[in-house]
Length: 468
Image 1: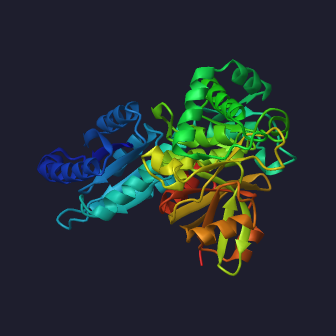
Image 2: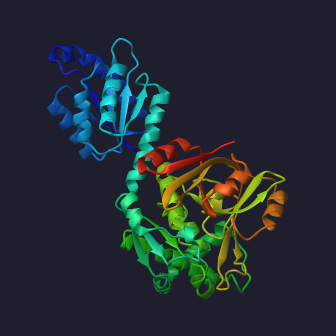
Image 3: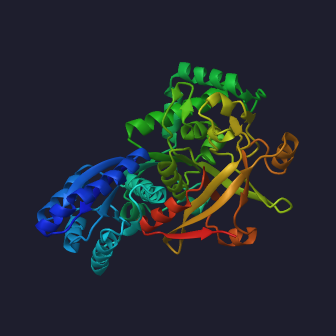
């Protein structure tokens, strides 16, 4: 739930304000009722008709830790009230005008917006009837984006291990992260995971193994995948879970390759479960975790998760099936099992999951988490850097699923033991391959491009949006 502060700006002449109070209240009441019905928590700052109440109202709303502040204009309003209120809050600002021609609300908004322009204070202008669905939806877009961006500030990323296999795009500048996004990076050696996994509760790991054996299909081979190796993977999951709680990590990344994958066990099961909204103990919070400790990937995922509330896909851009116009997004890491059916019921998701012995890349063994992502509209994107400056690349797409024979045949053209998402993107393949800034891409169900545009604006990041 997002928190929206609402302050109504009025006329500074006493007799005009008294005349207009009822009109303003009726508009604001309808507006706040519509916001509440849409699922937002509304914090009212009341009506502002003096310079002192402008500052006091804004400070009161700011103290409630709102995600975005709305200045509402139902009538002509003295612009300096807006200036004072804006100075007393640091949240993103929305100027919203009533379009009832009985009073000059649009005039009030334009005068206030022009004043803010003069001092360089960024804001967004919206207008419409107070309960207009499109208006309420647009406020929601800005509130969700602002909430996601604000949630980064003061957060901590747990980075288990360093740069994986020379992958420059997986490493970011920690000073830049703190300066631009307010995110700290806690460096943790992977040996800590080995130690913690060895000491983890063996009984709980056994319960997790039995849960997976019951709900998913486990293909033990006695060598690369055994009950003992699967439990080692689950103890590693418990290790990350406990370390995240102890060190107050908001999201994480695990290097894994090559040290853990060659000498301990693969991280696939741990990463999948960390990104899932459940485990064998029931529902739980998603802990966004990037494979190969991909920092910009994890940051993208955390933003997408904060906007949508769902798990976020992590995948390599593995292959383009030119004959179908479809991409195979495939990676050994953490396609959360939730993507198999996108169901609230873990049994429905895991019923479509196969745990296969790990492939030759990973001699230490363990299970790979394989499934086909459920079909539907998806928003794909990633934060990456051009000459040190961040950009947010976004494209709309559609995940597709075919008959079992076709799904298996397509998977076997790459690595069938890994999870696959067959994606049709709204961009030409050549444009995507020439311009995309990494080998990893991320996705969430639905069309969230508007929120991501606002995220880019709030973070000072250029948004590159592709479309046909």
